[in-house]
Length: 149
Image 1 (spheres, rainbow, N blue to C red):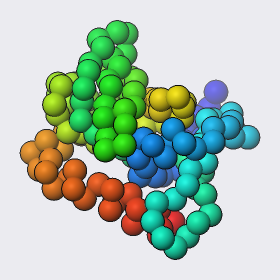
Image 2 (cartoon, rainbow, N blue to C red; image 1 turned 90 degrees about the vertical axis):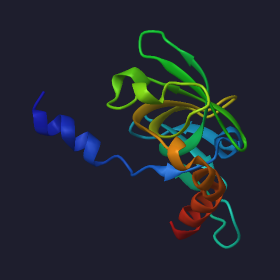
Image 3 (cartoon, one colour; image 1 turned 30 degrees about the vertical axis):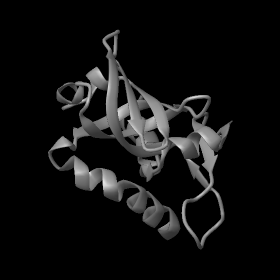
Image 4 (cartoon, helix red, strand yellow; image 1 turned 135 degrees about the horizontal axis):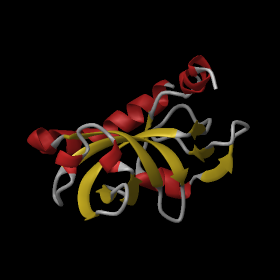
């Protein structure tokens, strides 16, 4: 396989869309033509009502549990429910986030939408330093982005 072919697929990946776990749980899961899992979700807020199709997401939440298996799985809680993140030990800066109580952001590729959302981590960062602000603003950030797209 040519190296350029490998990266051509990555270039076609959509940017991460900010979502809440409840949106994924209530969304409709399907397989896109490229074979990737997508979830059609209802937008937050007033205004645009056309559903969003998401396959790469940006989520935030509090670490509840860390399972150290082959790739490390983390259970997170946002204001609407729990979601799982796989592959955290395979990403740069993922390990410092692996403590219960930490407030983190995660970008990842959807693996499943329901009954509980599951992501494969691409990036993770600790937001605990300013967690009060991040927690308060998160739903507004999600709504603002979804109404802008």
